[in-house]
Length: 329
Image 1 (cartoon, rainbow, N blue to C red):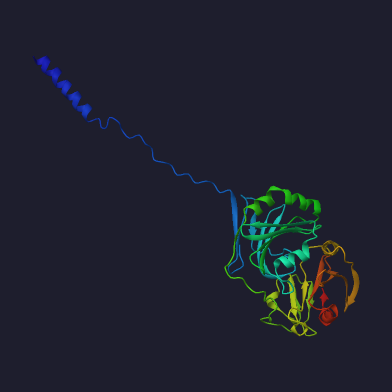
Image 2: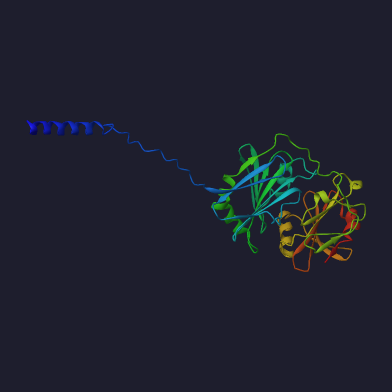
């Protein structure tokens, strides 16, 4: 009897342990892990300081944005802001925002009149925004983004010195250009601005003005006054409203292009035009007139690089008193 009782007690204890064992069908569901997709591109956001914005995407880790590098040759229009440059050893990508000069009816008018005969000229769309791709000879290649009739941005691809037309053709066909262009995000303000770039300068100066590079000095003369609002690090602007609302002379000292290369660039842009030699004051220039009546005067600085003068909406004769003051240091 004692043995039987002992066996029964042992069975009861086993059954009680089994009952404490918990759920016979325990929940084995594991917490869901949240995975974050790795970014495909580096993003650089630039604005004109107002309402227009670009987001530029480049391959991960391949470029460094240098806000201080604003040396790009961003076409001959009124720069609102030069934003800096995405740099690497093979190609630099500069960005600027601008407004067309009042001589043109629109960005489209400016671009088609100036660049339609370039080696590369393409018109396209990114969303609702019209874009242009242009490149000529050995000059840099640009994407022009139209925000409205007068405001636009330029994304400039510049290869190292010595690059030729075929090198830019290869760049256009390559993956880098495709990545930047096809993944570009454009945002614009709702209001369209009027083309008012020919207004009165904010703070005219009457004394000599020297470019930041230091190779060119100009003294306002002949009714031209220094227009600080239209000038930047590599160019000086002088306006003369007595000759017309848009009359201006722009003096460029970019130090980015050799003298002969600069001449070829203008020659490629206007293949039906010829250079002529003209001496004004102490300097001799090679002069060429564009298809729209703008005259370019090219001269050599002591570095062997070019400086040039752009005479806008007035004649060279009208601008001679100012050009005579130019000192090429």
